Amino acid sequence: MSTLQKGLSLIELLLVVAVVGILAGIAYPSYSEQVRKAARTEIAGLLFESAQLLERHYSRTGQYADSEALVTPLASGTEHYRLQAVRHSTSFTLTARRIPGGLMTGDRCADFVLDQAGVRRNPGAVDAGHGCWGG
Image (tube, rainbow, N blue to C red; front, side, top):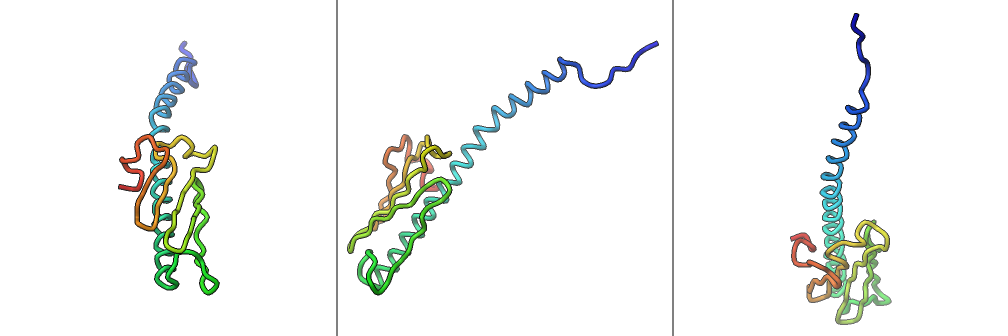
């Protein structure tokens, strides 16, 4: 008489757990980098959009700073970055700072800065030349 075995043995269960662990170890870093890339693209787009709003404001009022006649509100940021605008009559600087403790805390691109001349910078970046601004 033979008995039928039902279920998984301990070794089979350990093999399944090991395979799942290996796959997760490979997939998670790739997934995290894709999320960071999307966050960088999103904040770069928001910076360009904000710069366009300020240029439109300048064409109407002759200055980047708000006037009594016209106020141009800007977005406050995204889930991963906070946007700060310093506006003067003839210049502006838009800065996107990473939210402390968030996903972008250790990102290689660090913070983003855009000014009225279109100059793009990443102060504190480890490797700002490769894909930080979506290119």
